[in-house]
Length: 263
Ligand SMILES: Cc1cc2nc3c(=O)[nH]c(=O)nc-3n(C[C@H](O)[C@H](O)[C@H](O)COP(=O)(O)OP(=O)(O)OC[C@H]3O[C@@H](n4cnc5c(N)ncnc54)[C@H](O)[C@@H]3O)c2cc1C
Ligand code: FES
Image (cartoon, rainbow, N blue to C red; front, top):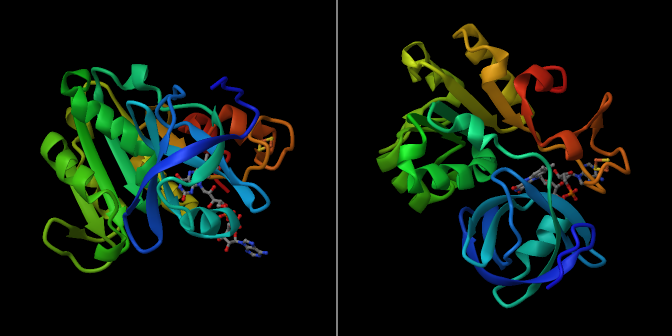
């Protein structure tokens, strides 16, 4: 298929994995090249369109992990293997893997925020020699909200992994918000490192504050924004914060820039 990044094109759904009651992963037949952290505009004609991150990629397919919150996502949850999903993309900036390689890396995710980091985690689990150390803190509301159980088991083996539940602890999960565990990342022993953070805006603000308290400089921190979008190509202004077009300059930002954008 000729790929035009501006035009929604039909793609076949290969399978659907129910991660939680409200979050499903859709595997779509697609061989378009993407960079880790980029997103597509997913749509159903006459229903709607929304930006969704690529949560995994493989031979001939991409995966999208979607939280059911509104018009488009409700519609997508009604689709099954064999059905058609329309997509355009990929769009946006990506995690700076060249910057991450051969250094220490900490990834901090809240809830569905793990989705835009999942393909990066999978990449480093597949290529362990490419990163000096990787600390993952993944926070979930409760056991029913835990995403990517199989990946998480693999990440626990490959990386220094802390999984947390907002409420009480459970086997394999520590109690408390991700912010309560950030001090366990041994930043002082790192020679050179980066930290990537994804989650709801309030979580990113608190995490950034905690990182700042621990002496992590802004330029070491990377975040990804889930801002309302429409065109995704810098035309409509829906995603604009001050003078910044999140769809073009983001969703992945260095914190030196993102600090002024977190409302
Ligand atoms: C770069 C990027 C990547 C993203 N990646 C993902 C991802 O991987 N997975 C994912 O699940 N999401 C992701 N999102 C978020 C996703 O795009 C939004 O949740 C999107 O709004 C869903 O579209 P929708 O049509 O289903 O919901 P909408 O209908 O747009 O509803 C979105 C929210 O607005 C509320 N709302 C809708 N209408 C009204 C109204 N009239 N009054 C008050 N509130 C209202 C809804 O309750 C809901 O909370 C991403 C966003 C961005 C920008
Ligand atoms: S979404 Fe239209 S300008 Fe960014």
